[in-house]
Length: 273
Image 1 (spheres, rainbow, N blue to C red):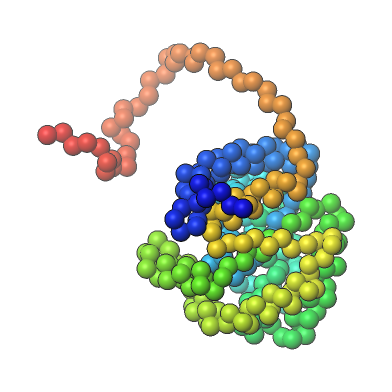
Image 2 (image 1 turned 180 degrees about the horizontal axis):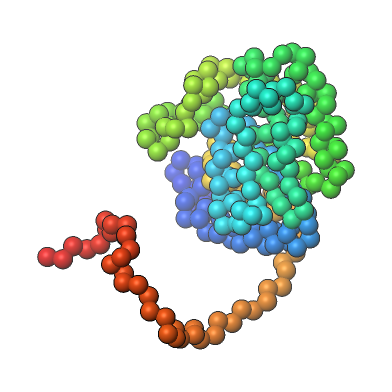
């Protein structure tokens, strides 16, 4: 049973609870990052789900305190004409991690089983070939030593509509709403069937899908990070103490006048009367 003290009057997680827990989890993510780097692990985490489900948001929460040289985001755009002629998985292979790296895919090769299928961007032959070959492709990645984790963010039709409306009414979010969103908004059932068909082929024992209930974004973020930390074994590495000695005095060097530099205007200083 949920602890009512941590929820607000709308049944959503209170912000102060979220912030406090997120801070603890982000410290643990740093420990995981250092373990991955020190031990040469290769980690791939896939984030999929409907539009507005919160995939990008949780990726932001995961990465905002981490080293981008170790933990990076894979978010590919529309394939070029040349890429369209390549083996379907080829451009995703180029994004895979080297030893000591984590790649978070904000959407992935599963585009073919989702938007490409529903919107008719691929042929039936291409679609069914993807469903047949994807489990073998992922098994090959895992056998090569990659830790592969797949998350599906599930959002209700009502909550999705609220988020679409929020994007339209908030100029900070307006850029998120695309022409594709307008089309996909009317294809709820088609996307549901595409997701179910995808799971029937690719939710395997060696590479399962983990479903995240995402109507409450804050809980979804925390639950995902908790789970991610729980399924990648790691240990806290010892940290060598760093001692800052006294700064060395400047000797013999005269810096040029400050007036010769061009400064950004300070728009927020207190104006003197």
